[in-house]
Image (spheres, rainbow, N blue to C red):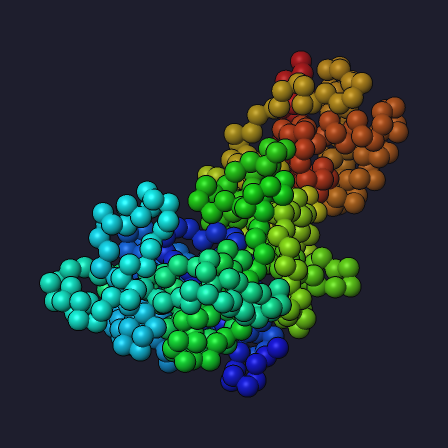
Length: 494
């Protein structure tokens, strides 16, 4: 559904700069971005900053930085500019005020002079706003306005009947008008509410398709009526399903940030948390695209360009989805495993530097390939391979409980390690393949299992129970350093 009768496809993401970017909002943006790219259209970033009390300085840049990290290009926005700017709502106030007063003049809206005390009394009565100023005599309204009393502009919703509209995901949806109130369009300070501002902007920015969370579905009839009152052609709407907590209970929190799942797993929900936790942007995008939409062919791993070729909003599942954090962990490992080595090394470098390591880039390019099948997140490199980037002269022998392998005591461990030194010295070719063959022969010669010999060597040269493959590690450390570390382990066993 490219809506060729409405011109080119134009979608938008319109966040409020009131908090860090939540992954639910990013998914709404992603689905709009995919749809625009599928149909050769444009994707627009618009900042809805009319909630002045909650707007946080600096968040507009953070929002744009999140898109840069994800690799989702923006065609028009605060940073990019465009023919329908400005793209920040607080810079478009005259436009909203003009159309709010136009609606009043045409009889679709009215000035409401209810005081804070009156509204409080209505709330206490449990009735909500009672429309007391809806049918105010024009002369009386003029007198009240002339006294400089504060007023808001409210939309006149039909009091009876039903309002229906088409949703690309849910089909035709119908609402009873009598269940809806006369909503505020323009506040007393001259700032619009979301209900007016987004419609004015979507019209003037020629937005053809709107992707937004299903929480906005109850407001759908109000928005449809405002579109009709303004006499503008409505865009297509797609109300996306909610992301639920990993246990399937309750909506994924927007405000709390990362929390622990039932099994103790850390669950990132803000874009910065994905970055901090060591996830790759391509894996995050693949993960989000898979929630509520299916690529088909039983494929779970696909590129963004492949998703563009197939994506359609009408294929989105309307059911809310649990947040499959385990799937993200698996996907991220798959993307790390298939990454170009130089690219992976470039991602690992700042992680290691952030942990305080001085990174030798040449060594990192040698280390990266032996880590690829073992890392689930970039942060795993610290525990698994940080020892490569410590001052080698500061390396000390590990504790005996790390050195001892199954069914081995100090005497046996020292025997294996001492026997390994001449083997290393004899190898003109210190490649990991040649090491493996030589130490396999040694294990057979001295009567130990391969795992016992290899494990003792790994512990001696890395100081860890878990590390990259033993012989690839020794190859990178080199003969002299490997022997030095083994001798330190032997000395600790005296």
